[in-house]
Amino acid sequence: MRLFKKIMKWIGLTLAVVLVLGGAFIAHSWYFKPVNINIFFARSFMQFALESPELLSSIHVLEQFGIDGHNAELDDESIASGDRLFEHMKRSKEILLTYDDEDLSAGDLMSKRVALNMMDALVELEKYRFHNYPLNQLFGVQSGFPSFMESTHQIHSVGDAEDYVSRLSQLGRKFGQVLDGLHHREQLGILPPQFVITKVLEEMRNFVATPAEEGILMVSLTDKMKEAELPEKEQQRIALEARDQIENTVYPAYEGFIAYFAELDNKVNENKGVWALPDGDDYYRLTMRLFTTTDYTPDYIHNFGLAEVDRLQTEILEILKAEGWDVTQGFYAAISEMAEIPRFYYSDSDEGRDQILADYQTIIDEVSTGLESYFDVLPGAGVEVQRVPEFKEKTSPGAYYQPPAMDGSRPGVFYANLYDIKATPRYGMRTLAYHEAVPGHHFQLAIQQQQEDLPFFRRVIPAVAYSEGWALYAERLAWELGFQDDPYDNIGRLQAELFRGVRLVVDTGIHYKRWSREEAIDYMISNTGMAESDVVAEIERYFVLPGQALAYKVGMTKLLELRDLASTELGDQFDIREFHNVVLTNGSVPLGILEDLVKQYIAAKLDASSQQQ
Image (spheres, rainbow, N blue to C red):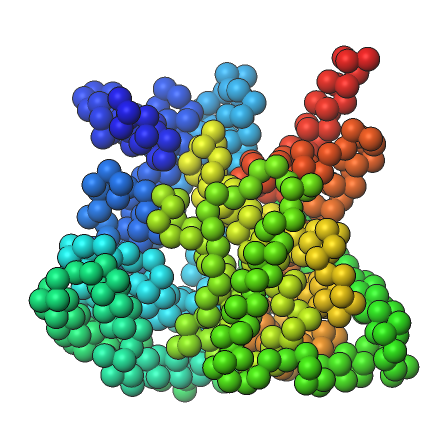
């Protein structure tokens, strides 16, 4: 019975039933409509998760029950697998709609709304399922596979190490399936921008040019085996098997991609937004809706972005003027002059980069001790700072975050890109740490994982406008708490928000107003003061992720509106800790649902107050 309860805690009722009870109830719950909506949620998530061994390894929940066969497998990337996903989603939606709202608790009704929102989005996306670039300079199997093996595949035993080799042996199959998808896209007239081809080719050629013993796949394996203290003889055996797989399976799989992209390079010579794809304008409006969870038009977002750029630049210039800077030549001249001051940068050396990582950790540790007056729900998992792996840092964003494993076996990780030392000015580090770690992404995602009263799918699914909006809101929150009292740190905060305002302009510019890559780069450089290397990486990111960059500022704006609403309506009864509880303990939700949750909180608080009078 103790095991039964523990399984329910982690995975949900359906898997517990499958593991423990057996019999006709299993078959009915697994293949037909479950009698309870929470069994349905658990079943639907498990049916989806069981199709992805890599997702199961990332969640790392089943291992504690001795279920680890998935750790030897890689995902099925075939077109047929995608077909099954969409069919599964359609069937699940049909079943979910048969649960009457009147029979559901408030919590279950909210879960139904969240699930339907997600299902509707995926069903609507089916028409455009090939409107993407599976290999690009930002993500894709060519960089995702080695990163997954290095950061996610855990090794604690000989069996785990053998599973690592098993996954290496399957890469030819997985890459071949992705290559089939690339050929299909080409037949549909869906080709990536030219810069994507150039950069992906460079990345993959550098990867296969590295001797197997020196590459991330081999180094990661040997380091993990040593840390696990596996028998020396086993380490040697497995290392030889891994090297054989890398040289005879992994590298040839990459060579297949290289050959395809080298041929594609002769066919593509332009950089265009998704407007150039079949039904590209409609596709862009759909991505806007999916990422922002709003119905805002491209014109509205573009103009809102322009207004925010003007507002934030004015605030920055006021601070610079107060600090004695000449601002008569305008924003670009002033911010460019500031960016050339050597004292704002670390030394361009290994020692300087090590110090950046150490200082990031100090910032996180400091802010973590000063949040009591703003939060009474805190993440149980820790967070650490690591450098973006060097093999992909040239084309990676300035930073990103990886959530902790749900079983506590792996902490959250804030990855900092240290490729260009000038992209990490000292006055911008606090804001970046607050965004990626505490009280930003790590806070939100780790707390979301802890909500054991929510269906499991609500503890793991993302909603970009909510999660990125929270992280941008967290930057401002840390300033309100007094952690950026240095005027230059505040400039760093405003620059970060300005950057998100500029994103509204350039994303709609590229995909709606048909700006060129160079137009977008010029606009971002002249309106942010960012390092050119960062700007190029960002603009090229927007080309391959249309609409995603809009989510940050849209989400932050909605959070601030809801906080102002709660503060105005509740007056002296407003408690920011309660507001943050509402926001953080309901999982990632669309902004419309978040608004409903906050309004329900306000109404309940006012009702309780009136009853006490």
